[in-house]
Image 1 (cartoon, rainbow, N blue to C red):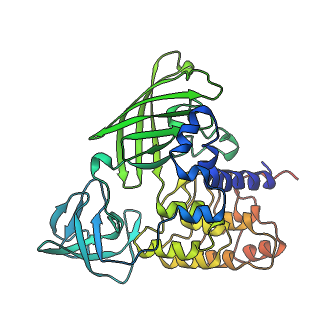
Image 2 (image 1 turned 135 degrees about the vertical axis):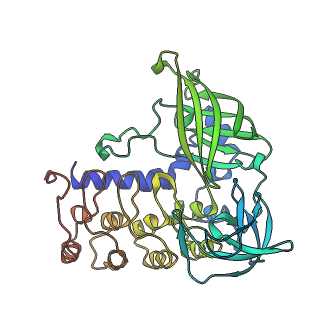
Image 3 (image 1 turned 180 degrees about the horizontal axis):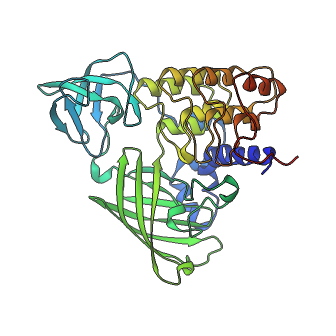
Length: 400
C-alpha cells in the first residue's frame, strides 16, 4: 500500500466513519426513516444544530452518584489496598468532600481518588466509577445510543480490513441501536432499519421489532439477542444467535462490543463543528471523564485533537493524564495521525508536543508504517529524523 493510500484510508476511517457514521447510518430508507425520526441527531445540518445536542454547562453541586453497573467500593483510604467500608449499588448518592490533587491510573483508567460522604459514612472512591448525573436504574441502564465496535482481526494488515462490518452484511451486529426510556427502540445501518420494543431483565435483553431492508426486500436473517455483558458504564458486549444464508441455516453465535454515545464522545465526534469544543472537553475532564476514554475504532480523545492539529486541546488532555501513544484499530498513534493531517506548514507544535510527551517516533501501525513514512513535509521529516525516526522499518518501501 502506498503512503497516499494509507493516508487516504486513515482519513476515510477516522474522519468519515467516526465523525459522520451516525448521519450515514440514518439514510432515508424505509426502515431507517422511522429510526431517524426518533433521534434528533439524525437531522443535524449546521454548527448551531450540533451545539443544541450538547449538554449545558451546569454548575457543580458537589453531588455524585455511583455509576458502575457492578457497584462501587467505598474504601477507608485512597488506595486499592485499603479496607472496603461499603459496597454501593448503581445510583447511590454521595457528596464530594475532597479529592487528591494528582490523577492516578488504575486498571487502565485515569482519575482521582475522591473523598465522599454517604449517609453517616465517609470514605474514598475512584472517580471513573462515579457520575455528576444520576444514572438510570439497572433495568433501564441500556437506554441511549450504542455504536458497534469493529469486527475484524486487528492483527491483519490494514489492506486486509476492507470489510469493517460484521461477518454477515446487514446483520444485527452492524446495527446502531437507540434504546428509548419508553421501552421502544430504533436501529439501522446502510442496509436495514428496524423499530420495536425492548426489555431488560438481568443480563437478558429481549427485542420485539419489525424492520425492512433497503428496497422493501425481506430481511433474510433471523437473529436472537441472547445476553449482554457490561464492561463498564459506556462499554458492553452483545451476544447473538444468528441464522443466515451464508451459514446454510445453521445457528452462528456472534459476540460484538458496543460503545455508548456520551456527552464526551458527541463533543469529539462533532469536533469540527463546535467552536467551543476545547472549553467543553475541559469541562468534561473537570466532571471526571476519563481522558483516555475509548471511542469507536479504539480512538481516544487525543487522536481527535491530533487530527485537528489542536495544540491547546492536546495540552489539556496530556495534562489531564492522557497517554501520548495509544493505538487505534489501525495501529495508528496520535503521532501517526498528527503527521498524516499535517498540512506542510512550518507549524510543528502538535508533533513536537507529542514527541516531548513521550510518543514513540518509530511506532508502527498495522502495516508497519512509522510516522516518518507518513510525513510529507521535509521539515517534519527532518524533525522526526533528529529524534531517531527510521523509515520503512516494518514494511517494504512504498510504491512510488
